[in-house]
Image 1 (cartoon, chains in turn purple, cyan):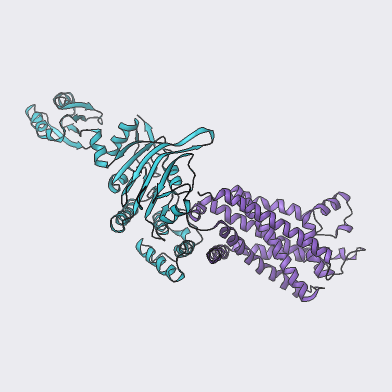
Image 2: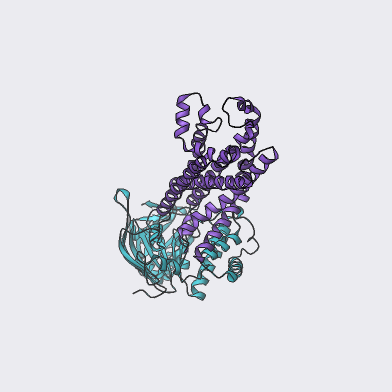
Length: 258
Length: 327
């Protein structure tokens, strides 16, 4: 167990070092979601006047979106890093050491999660500075961060799965628009009951991303909403399990050794 | 049972999709402390063999023991005993040389207090102490290869696999790497299995050479023995008077069969070897054939390769790659 921890620690350190040396992997995940948040809050504030809109501050409603977008960047970063290891042959070098497969995956995800944690704290801090009110209080903020990180982990694991399966950075980059489609076809801009188009509302209802957003939103807008939180955590956990199991399986195929 | 530092390969086969046999039932043995050169053109099966022996590719059939361990059922023991620098110097361009060594020492389970000192020692050994804190992305090809070698040595392996370690390197870097590999075998008793496309590399470094072509070993032995097996030296002569080629050829034909020679020159394979040189010079003098250039060619590994495979390892091209060409 100590060996595994040491290996995970070293792989996580590598992942963080890689990220810190590529500003393009740090700046966009922090700046882009905040810029989009500012644009949305500025442009869509009138939506709060709609009958049935759950809050009178669009910031309170939209704060969940940066966490989702941050998770998308986590997916790209995790996947690209592993794909690069496949492409450069670095994975073979690692395979020749006594490294356990779990250490590579956990270390990579650990590094990506560290960046996601920093990004999440910045989203929250900027939100609070801009007038965000969290109805569930400090405890709610902590739950929001935990759920946000769990979502980032789930998406990072899915990115790792694609990176390992495809072994190509381009394939991982190709995930970005796919993930964005899921985000746009969810309840990101309006609460589901207020979506007028029935087809859109149906897709948003089946889209798991809606439940992730609603879970985060619930602690901000409603307070302690057990159903929304249960659904949010359940979807995040299922995606985590699927992503990690898939990535582990892909790693077994990639990191072949007798 | 292979001794602790040796390699024993018995009928190793690797088949890929479509029934392509990259390695087709090879047998060989590498003795402890020996440098074994595995020589062959691109696609001959060298790297596939190394991948199997380093446990990164399961064989289709056959067996092999490395450091006394079976490569299929005792893979983790094999990996503990070996170091490998594979064909591509697989390095992370974003990490420094020292960070690579730190990662490698940790993954190999070196005690924490030894990691830094071992890393520094290895950087010093491969001449990268000054560049240790620079990102690998800025290293030259030779520096990357040297770091690759240092990483393979982190856990003091008993057997070292080097897959085309000098491909693409400049002559100075190549010579430095040869020195280091030679030192590892001589002073540290490390067994080295080295794949190469370079005849000179195999000739200079290897105690014994295995020549592989189309997945099969076609010849094996010391470079000297292999060359002796192929035969006698040839003599190439350029006459002082270019119109004297026919007369020159007539004289030389007394000493052996004619072989290919460049334009304006005549060459024969000497029937009784280099001992005939004096007689040749006397005969040419007696026949009044003036000589501009006179050169004795000993058989090379290229001649061995040609004799055994029917094609030759062509001279190095500009990219540093060679390939087999039919003759």
